[in-house]
Length: 529
Image 1 (spheres, one colour):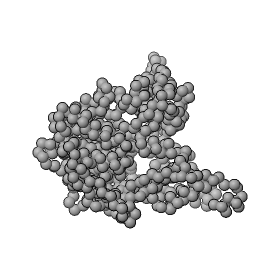
Image 2 (image 1 turned 45 degrees about the horizontal axis):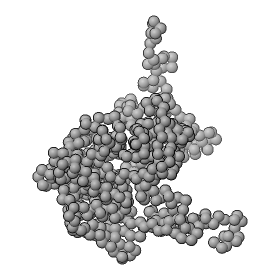
Image 3 (image 1 turned 90 degrees about the vertical axis):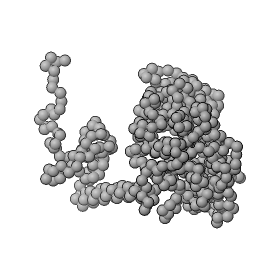
């Protein structure tokens, strides 16, 4: 550094030199979870760790160029001020949201606690001003399956007759274990008795604080290992064990997991399944078996922090869940007989339906869903994994036994098979992209050889710009005119894919009106009306 400071032609920025040096050292660790957070970014970093921030408390998106409220958070300043789902925010303190990103609008909404912010809202065509008093917002990490229509409180009882409850964990924050325990108490209050069966939904839960997962597991375990951690070289082993508590719960448990369940989610799922306290339903988890520690820096870097992987954790069996590139096994697998996969399309439909259940003031009639019926859950909520968990708990509560809901092939691991399918799909996409690049290279090489300008993809027009083909059909014929296949169009960008595939438009082809005729235009009214 002394040589650079003395001889570099441009006077270096000391802060930039320091940041580059730290980033370089962290990059050399080959640790995807290690990160350097400079002092100016530390506030946002802490917000992510604690789930706390100052604002109005609403989930937002951008739609048609403006900020829109997805839903106010329960009990938030926005909720208390009367902000409603679907409200279009035109201005924030007189500043238009048009053209702004979600992050840009959020920056305007943020401020000090107890300070007002005025929203100009478009609600069903009427413009109204709403004053919201900012406050500390705590991100909700524990949810039920549906909000009540009258007071927006979460409902946890999914099957009253059999005493089955449902709790979803979005993240493991500092108060998640306490909130989880409170949700179980509320479920028993809604039931008017003890919980007989419990669904813990850990799908899309990226993890969080390890101690919270340990506390939750201990609610259901009288003894046994919950998780162990080991540092560099496998030393400094620490073992977390369950303690017998008066409040231990003995209900049957089905845990929902998928490929986005990670870290602390895997600890909770692994602890309960490997101690024979629960079954896991769904697909294999992500495979993040590492523990990060946040350490503050001193001196010139005061106020900055680094997050480092310092330990790996192991399930009660001693198995590491960390995913390695050359490994066939990682994470937590669904229990044998309870593997339930979902396609990308099914997942998209399910998330859209689930989102509707979270919105305060949603218009959709939730009473149309029989939450205790697996068939109704699949039909109305598009969630075969939840349906499988409900079905499994029906049998468990009624007979005391678990009955498989899927036919796993005894000769192959369904989780490995599912992962292999995903890898093959990705490989096909990559090969398709390589083929497109090869065709584009051929076009450019031909243009260079001939001296002509290459035809840009932007200049190719296969379909009129104002036509949306999504949901339509496409017939494929061979050169002899025989119909080979009929395909349903599911992507609005079909024209781009067709251009890349190397097709060209046939003027006057099937379905196209001859140049001198009006095609399908309606006949003129003889009366001129």
